[in-house]
Image 1 (cartoon, rainbow, N blue to C red):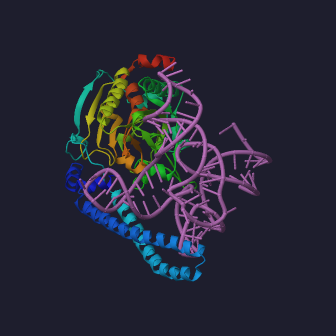
Image 2 (cartoon, protein in one colour; image 1 turned 60 degrees about the vertical axis):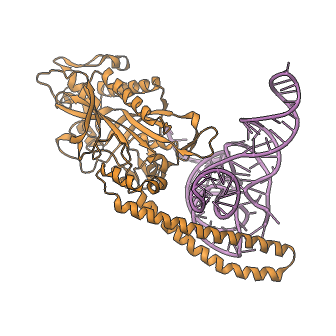
Image 3 (tube, chains in turn orange, green; image 1 turned 180 degrees about the vertical axis):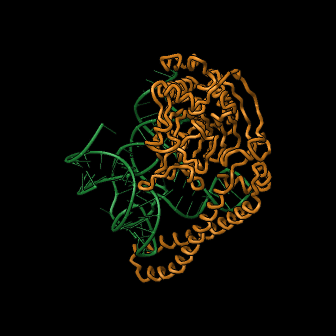
Length: 423
RNA sequence: GGAGAGUUGGCCGAGUGGUCGAAGGCGCACGCCUGGAAAGUGUGUAAACCUCAAAAGGGUUUCGAGGGUUCGAAUCCCUCACUCUCCGCCA
């Protein structure tokens, strides 16, 4: 959510910048400014009346104390009109604020100046790449490899739950656990403190990171208790800092978390979602940082470098994309996607998305910091990234490392797996 | 799930209708004292919004959340959430 100050001070800039995201904000911004002005005017009026009311009340108290009941009662009569007016104004005030809020949540975050214009994923910029695409003959896609070596059972998942809930078995399950541990260890070594968050969150948390009110269709909702299954650990981990005022010296705060992630993915279908390509439940290790506004883009670079080190240690061919305005998420100011090449499907698969949200989330979260000697609090910047999402990594590992006798496990994972080949 | 007790500032804790944003203590900051420290001592110590070019200053709000009674509520009433204790159930 943009701040009112941002909008009031740079109205034209907000409209211009949002064009990059293909968002026409003109009318919305005008309405917001008008409502905000109304809000201020109403508040000034209501405050003045309330001040009058307060002093009148004090007088009445004093009069009663002095035993001047008649005068006190006379004064009481004066308050009735005031009370009525205040009530009227606060009702207007409440409604205005509600309207304002409803409009504010419709505005996407402003894209960073380095974000290229563009309509779709085709307009994303390749920033850099690395790794070797293996040359394979008779390569099998991962869903066939999964069946061949009996390491992932998609049909069994359908029986237990439904499509998109695979069952990992034997070495498949072990490899999954190895990846989680590898990613967590790497993040810990890089200075991220591990947390193990709840897998369900309440409405406030959903609002704080931007899933609610608009994107509730993407989350599984447990209506009986009004809780949501998390689509990413970003939600509970970032919400740790909701309503928190940090000390400037504590920044940046760095957390990593493993969690299962749940996504309804309504409307997805077709060959792109085969096998592990798109699931309703999957595992992911997430990194989250709360940063000082002055250094958040350096922090973002650091996170990108961390993810890069992961894909290269795994020996996968990778590339980094700078997302264009049209492909970026609602809440992000700048996003880098990581893709790995999956050799049998012969396509790039997105395995990580690393973003700076600037103050967009912290404004909703009321996540602030105060610097030594400063009087005012400021909104912190929040950032997060996948490091990494498992299923497509698994898909690429299986496909790229297959040979006649089985599937080779990357060296860095062997200590975590306890085996070096799946056969 | 049943019964009871609670929720006050960074922390502890007082406060049952009026001048309470809230005593007192701890912690923290700055000063005095000291050769230095401890002890002692003095001062200060929340957030949001509005007003002001800014700062200063002023106004309003906030004692778990929301609603109500009242001229006036941390204090009374209602609803909800959470915490603790006992019982039940249970990985």
